[in-house]
Image 1 (cartoon, rainbow, N blue to C red):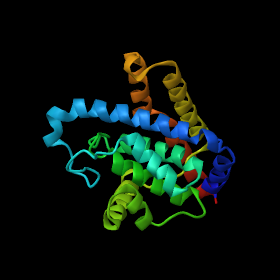
Image 2: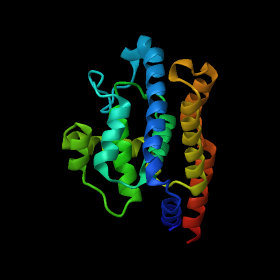
Image 3: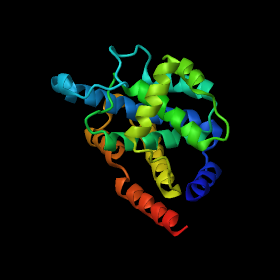
Image 4: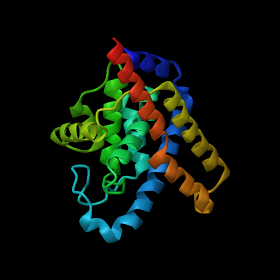
Length: 220
């Protein structure tokens, strides 16, 4: 019951549709920097990394930005789904430290997080076969990735309104930074700040939220 209330409140706070492309750009920028950083950091250890269904054999030729714009164009999910997908990606990173986001897995992680978010947040959404076509993978792969992702985040799909708002603020700061700074001139401390935010943001608050939800369930 608690998660249903949170869903309604989050939908009520959805960003204006006209600024959604900016949110897509901000998310793309963050994920691009995290992927490139992890590419450099993990290259010497790649042979020791965990093998995952999310890993492609080669880097996809489509950029992260173009990939997210394609999803935005065809998936037709609610605006809040992209924010919640961003939160799910953060949870996945925290729970799967041996599977860092890089250029080999970021595209599959994006399409899967949006699919899971749309199913949880929206009353109506396209099926896995449609998302597979949008994401450039087979339906069988999409089904497997969805299951892997759900286990990867421990089926923790609920998002509190306060967490949602904090992640919105993070993306808004990214949009402001993109306006103020050229990507070639971004101070390194700002880049590190956003990496840290993506990897560690609000873990304690979400744990508290889950604990409270468990208490409510027990009481009922």
